[in-house]
Length: 73
Image 1: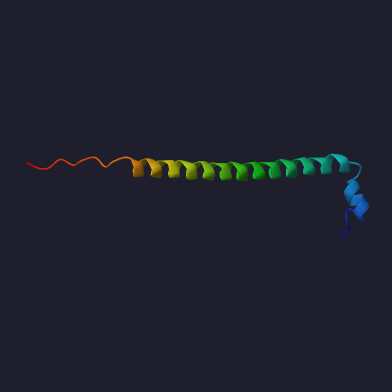
Image 2: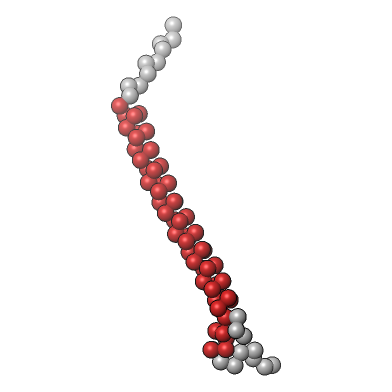
């Protein structure tokens, strides 16, 4: 079995297609990282928003008087 690339510089050059290959890799990895970061920030924002909403709901229920129950006749 013979190796296709005999040195690291040949591997990076990829037979003169290295610029295209490595730029595609870089773009793909960049987009994936951006998506991960965006998703994490959106999740954190949603959790914060839900926490605020729950606190407001708890405040409303604590302030509002309980409705009077009807006495059976």
